[in-house]
Length: 636
Image (tube, rainbow, N blue to C red; front, top):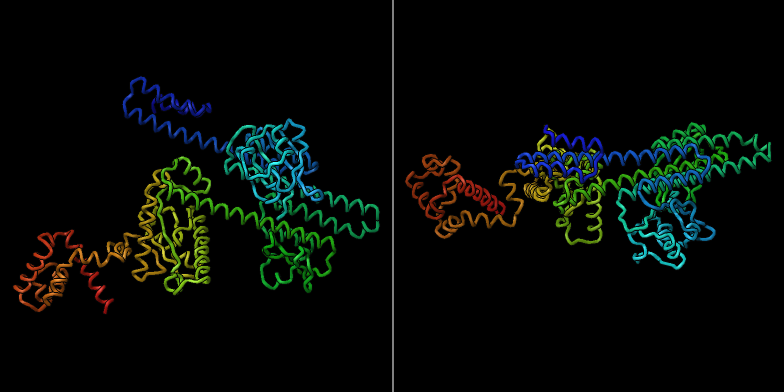
């Protein structure tokens, strides 16, 4: 390692700014270094910058995870709601690097939203601001339950600007604002904001990070409300000692369930963890189910309902019934325990929605990255690698592009007659099912998937012992087994490094589609293969519209000669190639004299040209003979 190259290690060690990494190259060029030395230094510089970017990303992610962990720790020991909310707002402001962060809560009685906590604010008017539902950015977030972001609030026509709001925002000097909703189930209870006094663009990761803090804030508020409810109940019980004695066990169980459910949520537990915790506390068997019998017994108002000897609480969100919690073996259930069962059902719905949202978001991100590789190959390789790393995909390894399509009965619209509403719905449903199955497969294989051209395209890593054909067959088998349909998969030749050079991806996808079309034309629906497995015949069959033209261009004069004169030159040509281009064996196959064979071959040479027996021409002629024979067989 040269002294100049070692200097990059020193820059990394002291955390130097990006601009400092240009200095060794500039010094070497000034000192008259040769092209090879400069190229080596440039390579070392790029490697050092990649290491620096990775270290910066790790430090940023560590800071974010640390802040989220500290927030979760605050929630676990919640004593003062205002203190927890202030900590959340402070951490959000620090990590997003904004000048101001604030949190508003909805006032159901007044029908508006008001400031609860501010950090970095200097305007008293802004700190006392109240927004009507739908007014301003915050009112729109509270009304629609969707994040909104603007890099210049006063120039953004999407928001309902009022004099009160604009005056307060102007007093604070805010320009760029990001707001995300605080959700309890499907209900918006407030908005968490991050804002700057200058124009800036908030990245998608920053929106997601602020959303994580908003989720913690919502849990804190819900937990505080639960604690307030518990304290209120305890206060009432203290005024009636007899009621305390009768119901102390119930309150204790409710508190235990609350603690257990909080612990389950904080450690990232699942639906079955909630059911197990509830089973232990309530002294019965709690199961999560999606059976039609149990779902029919659920109520529409969210309350637990007795069904025979069981109690059933619906797990729902946004009007969608996701399942139910069923408590068995406990027919006489105290009202507080009923409320506990209902609260557990709400927590279960939040967990299911969180899992679904995370899964859908990841699949969309995978599809967007693959779309960029196909449509925008000039993207910065460093950014492509960063996006792939977040999806646990290594785009510097060899990959294969695969085109997949459902080929079961009725899957092809041309086979179903005139398309109607049912046909279109079926085709749309098939494409959605295929995309969903392919996305799951891509996620398990550290690859990418996207819906495209009526089917699905996948980009999967190629294992050291695998071939493109192996990968195509595995993919066809796995997708077909999941969907219980015939799924045909065509594969491209391997792409060495999609991140290093994305330009071959589009061509590889076109090759995979041609292979897919060839498989269907060859009657091999439901199978997987790579283009090289099908040879030249398979690639040509992928474009059936040019088969006749290919035959005509290659040996049309011979065919016309036979048709006009009733000769047998085509059959002679076929026998000649079949006999290894031996006139003696050809005359035996045709049962004619060898001179007849020689005369026919001479005639063929005059029709096709003197080079018709060269390797390249003879290969094309043999292929044209095969296609001509297939066309004749189909015609008869």
